[in-house]
Amino acid sequence: MAQTWTLLIVEDNPDDIELTLLAFEQTGLRENVVIARDGVEAINYLFADNPVLNSLPALILLDLQLPRINGLEVLRLIRSHARTQLLPIVILTTSHEESDRLQGYSLGCNSYIRKPVDFDQFVNVIQQLGMYWLVLNSPPPLTQ
Image (cartoon, rainbow, N blue to C red; front, side, top):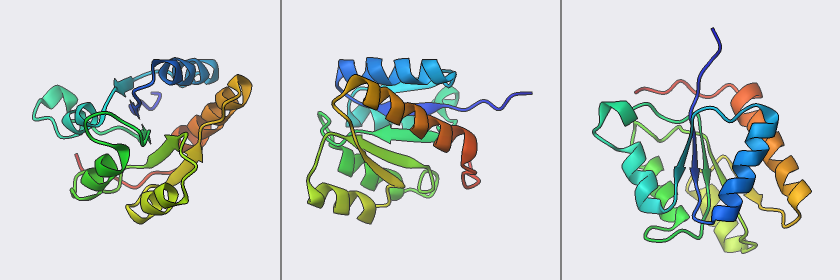
């Protein structure tokens, strides 16, 4: 039986969402993708009392510039709870600020990737990211 997983994309830019989904589709890794369009939606998804939503994602792609709760605060909240503290989190952002990168790693992100502006480069980065984190990587065992 094939392994099933969920990918949580926390992104407010519709164009970036579409490109990310397209890249995952081209790699064959599109199943079970959940989109949170701001930090509140991401937190609600991860900490919902609804049993249908209680399974944790295998990977979170997290933008930093989000409405309502920014990405660094989302990361802080995720890392502060035992249930979610080991989730693989890749910050995928346009920010070139060293302070964002330093704070992201200080708060426990697993990787920090700047979004390429070029379409082909963006698709290539997303495909490589998906293959590594969802196929090659052995994540820590998570308690549900």
